[in-house]
Amino acid sequence: MRAAVLGKPIAHSLSPVLHTAAYRALGLDGEWTYEIVECDEAELPGVLDGGWAGLSLTMPLKRAVLPLLDHVEPLAVEVGGANTVVFRRDGRHGYNTDVPGMVAALAAIGVVEADSATILGAGATACAALAALRELGLTEVLVLVRDQARAGDLLAAARRLDMVADVRLLTSGLRDGDLLISTLPAGAADFFSKRPLVSPPRPSAVLDVVYAPWPTPLATAAERAGIPVASGGDLLLYQAARQVELMTGVAAAPLEAMRAALARAQA
Image (cartoon, rainbow, N blue to C red; front, side, top):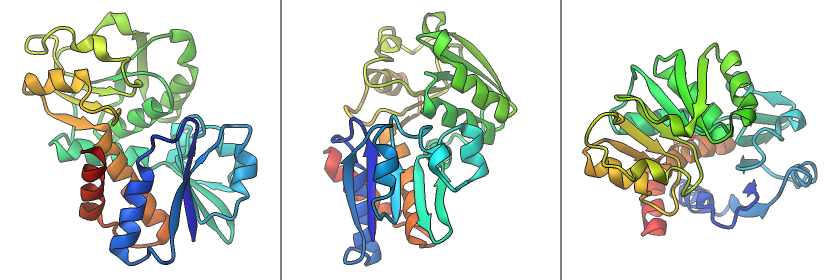
């Protein structure tokens, strides 16, 4: 059985580390393989026909894949993106495991509900963050972006999720006490770490979806201030665990084996 992660650029991906560790722990390493395939939107239709059992999708494919699927779970429809494709006899099934991955990563640092939250960024991962915050009980979220004109997809996702997204420029700054989820690429959120996060406005907890390089300046500033921090590595682990379950059909992915493999890869 063949599986892979698709995206462009993709050479940096640690998904093969996680999935391969899962196969080994489950005794499936003689049956399943997992590889990296560089692929953009134009190449995606052809790659989907490659005889796969399952695929993980990253930038820029999570939205582009939706019209190419036969079945899409309601959550992926609401978010407007699928990061997982499972191939079954009745066709291609699309799922979003970023949302449960975020919920699990936040729960691991003790965040199971939120009074308020701020998202940095408006891409596909930010849309998943909206859905995760809905799971934590929120209906309204502040979203800080670099370009408000490019927030259309996020605003559409908010409407589907029955949420309100208050979109402002990044220069507007943080709100005191918010759960902060940064979906920005490496380096883009660094300016928030320029001042100590020891006095208001300071977040109550931070999830930074970057996992390389780690720790990010934002994560370092938050940890120094005693603020709980979840990393992009945590998100990667939990969303990959759900992907393993969907692709292989096992009831529970071997989370600790996957966590240990990720730690070795990041050491």
